[in-house]
Length: 340
Image (tube, rainbow, N blue to C red; front, side, top):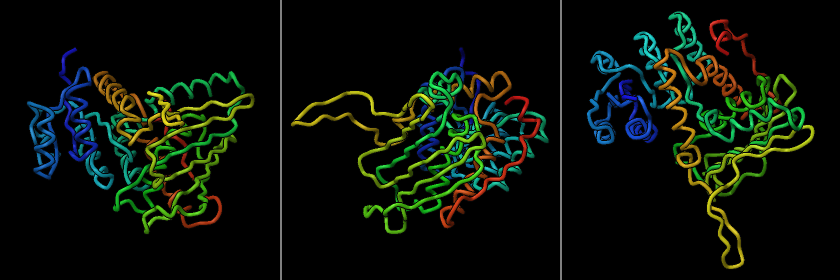
């Protein structure tokens, strides 16, 4: 397959540069034609990863060049709405890193703009849906070999976070993933969110109160708890345990070299998301490219992104509230229901 699907990557920070490298070296049927990044240094560094690509300081210039068939948005979330509306106006397919936007109001504006255009063009980058273990667990939930799903226990742990990581990011940058993947796994819709605080980790940055326990109720009766823990030091860990009527299933356990030494046993844990979900990112982008070439999408829709924005807003309120915060979602528009 030729690399004739020309992708403009918007944003050349850590995530954007990683996608530039991925498309240039791993993804079949596509190539990087443009890197859009206002910072000259980051733009130049990203262009070194994609020989032949052109650099642009803004998205309008890249689209006007006539060298773009699809767009991958990897900027910080506060810039997503503007980029998405610009790409929708151009009628091009777009893979947008999470979140869709930073709040429900702007996410709904994007949904309305896409519906007004008459075609689904936006795929949201919730890559866990492309992780092989999550896919396998979802099949088990649907097939019910151990009966109905009763509960999900999720663990989302970081060794540490930068000083720029603030309290609301526990929800908006981290639990945001669970707000997408949990309903997808369980076949339900989040109806309420509650946050509980255990004893504070003395190793946490002074401005953070964590870890937190996030409790979700789904409309099908499934209960979910998510341990969000960002100062645990030992590594990066994302695990899920599913409790069924007649059994238990787990994903995300450490794998690889096992070592017995000095009277101890060890298995290496991941350091960050780039290794834990590398294959999922590759599969996500490949699926998007293949679908875009067919004129469709292959993952979470803009409406899925909107639902997560509503859950995140409730989750942020729950950080400062006692008891469950309701999640109120509109009925899925027919525009999205047909594909779902």
